[in-house]
Amino acid sequence: MPRRGTDVLNSGLEGRVCIVTGAASGIGRACIEILEGEGAKLALVDNNAQALEQHTVADDGHMRLVADISDRADVERAFGEVRDHFGQIDVLIHSAGIYRISKLPDVDDEEWDQIIDINLKGTFLVCQTAVEHMREHGDGRIVLFGSFAARTGGLRASAPYAAAKAGIGGLTRHVAAYAGPLGVRVNCIHPGFTFTEMNTILNQEARSEAFSRTPLGRGSQPSEQAAMAVVLVSDLASFVHGATLDVNGGMYMA
Ligand SMILES: NC(=O)c1ccc[n+]([C@@H]2O[C@H](COP(=O)([O-])OP(=O)(O)OC[C@H]3O[C@@H](n4cnc5c(N)ncnc54)[C@H](O)[C@@H]3O)[C@@H](O)[C@H]2O)c1
Image (tube, rainbow, N blue to C red; front, side, top):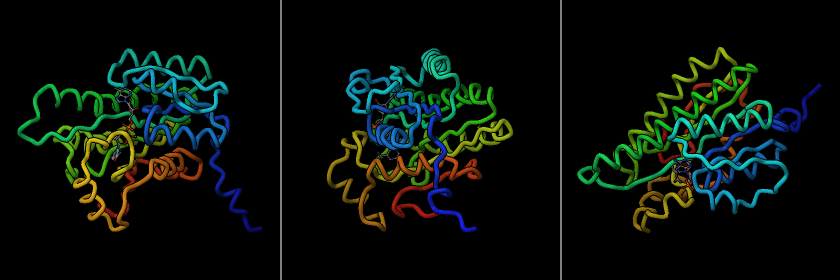
């Protein structure tokens, strides 16, 4: 008997406990909107308390946690609170990050350390903490966000940003090798230029350059990145593991 599309395309995310970091803005925010539609239980994590509070998501039992993902104590406290409140953690979509456009000679130690701390060490901390919770019940799904800068060096991205995002690709494969046998799937998305708060620092010339280098001729909406992240943590991607997915309109083709 043929299977109906709605059976095959069921995300299986209803009632699942999902942590989204960077939930107050951009791609993370768009993930929250889709996951809410799927009936997931949500924990919104961000270090911007005001933006988190103003989040328009319906107030039906979701958690909002102010935490700095580069701080081990903060990550362990926030994830522990989610585990205590909902009983377990099923999904992590890690979208928190920062972006800088300094040229190579202008990158000082402070900028290097800040970007590596938030974008790379923070990604390590949330993975390490999430896997420890997910292994308790032998099931979990994680999506990390790299960038096309990991592939190309970036449009205007600074050296630590490109290095951190390339590092996330390696971290994805390491965590996948370790956590797969524990029942935890891990994948990474490398977005192309996406219309969010993050790259409002790019001027029109940089934007035009990005679009001219993109065969689809435009930037991405946050929802186009979020949709792929949600698919990767859903039952639809049950055999996708350790992968890096380019969602960039063809700007970089492997
Ligand atoms: N927008 C793009 O064009 C683009 C392109 C490639 C990759 N990415 C990546 O996609 C992810 C999402 O980016 P976005 O465009 O939605 O950015 P955004 O700036 O709109 O949102 C990032 C969120 O992360 C939060 N955040 C920053 N530092 C934090 C910290 N230390 N602790 C907790 N939260 C913190 C911010 O408060 C913000 O709400 C990032 O990892 C980014 O590097 C974005």
